[in-house]
Image (cartoon, rainbow, N blue to C red; front, side, top):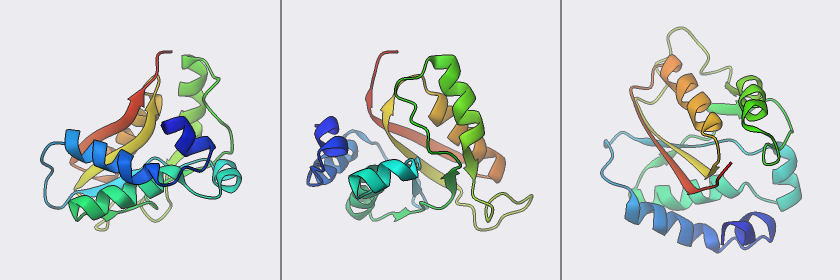
Length: 152
């Protein structure tokens, strides 16, 4: 289902994936904001849509939450899916950053609770990097969710 969604524009799957996440997800603090892991810009152009932003919006609608897709940003156009674990860690350490508006010593706009959302967990490098960035910006509570896990 995820491959069909990502690579064959089966956008109706976004609602099903959001439903599945919602069914498995426990209670969240009321002020939780959904932060999707940013998709590589070239992939958005190829697909014609940002697959995880669409799932985030569907989940936000179900949970009556807000989506904040501008807190994190990608600084590259490189795909990780064929990289080794060390190469993934190296790439993501340089390519996933806080957006300049949130990369401030004191930031009152940063949410206190975040649901971090990604499609595939392979090594955990992306989620670990994203969570570290969010913590450094002042987020106090992070729940990380991936749609599926993939062996390395």
